[in-house]
Image 1 (cartoon, helix red, strand yellow):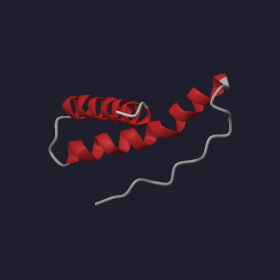
Image 2: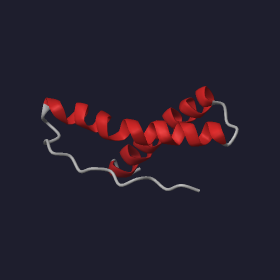
Image 3: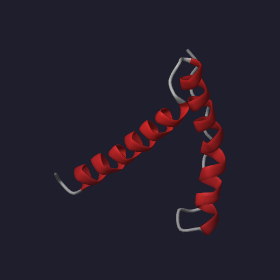
Length: 70
């Protein structure tokens, strides 16, 4: 099983407009690789992408709950 390649650190502050663009550029190849690996394993690419969106949203929700004390 392949592992995630090292992800470059940001070169802009989180308040800089270029931060989000840079983040997309850094994460896009990782996401593409993950979707390709899922598809190669027999998973439907569209359903795998949807599942990744769900899991990402759940991570944000969990983080928000923990930081809110609940």
